[in-house]
Length: 383
Image (cartoon, rainbow, N blue to C red; front, top):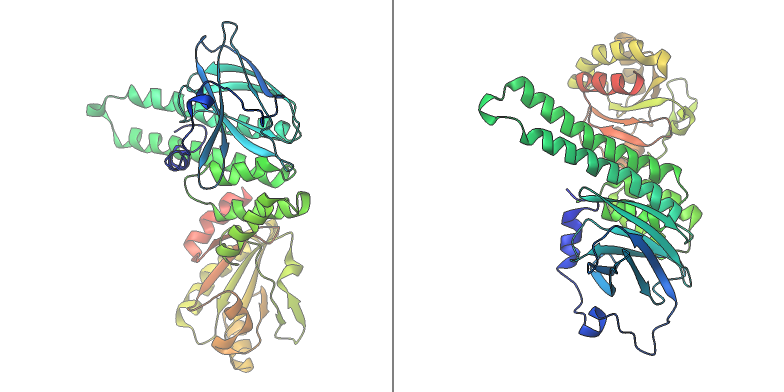
């Protein structure tokens, strides 16, 4: 697994535009601006071919090449930036990862210091409006690549003829922990760093498949920090395709009446981990789950857990009687619309019980959890 997603980039490589021998020889026409866009010092061998490509959502476009000299230096001369920051990718001797991402604005000049480190590179950026953020992101995902190298080396030493089930489970857990750590690091970057082309790079090019939560988080950042950017426009289109109730989405607000006739908004519970529980008095499986959910509520309520139960009843008396009989102490709301409930339609509920677990920010963590699954998730959240 390479530092930028191998499958994503290989797909882009298949759509390369053909480049001429003039490009290979780094000869520039009169139309090319002769400013130095990128200069680098490296520990590369003299004669190594450095390739500069522009990354787009559909293809890699080779823009320039350079030959590493005897001192390990190479450069790309020309105006390869854009007003909002162009995402470029440097590879060596071929166009497959690993590589080095660089963001260039019009007229920007970037200096790189590059050292090989196994199958990745240690890189320092100097210059460009967004390359400090790219350096932070690069550090997150190259750390994973380096850890994977160590992991793969350790796995290669295991004698397949003497592998026990315990070793197999430990190895699988270690691998999954590495993946989880990588994803968590990239998610933290997207959430906490100012929106930039590096944010777009993190979401679009570091995962084989689109991660809905990251797309939504990235769009939320970008529409604030770079509202007019084409990167934001593309994220907006991607977010629109995802839908409102997938993990990572900000849960659509519900504003219905309680059994006492007061209006209670879902959004009023921000700051707590909230389980939206669609149920009804007439739903046998729902009522069967209630005692188990009640135990979990008592276990976690003082740690910041709340339940927002939305009933699909159409009879108020039966709804209230079920709450009293089952002894359900959490928040209850309904519009008594049955299957035509406005909340059920908003959330696309077609069967019950149906649940949506929200984090403290009101984003959906997971859907469809039953009590035994919910216990495991809450334990992880509150430990």
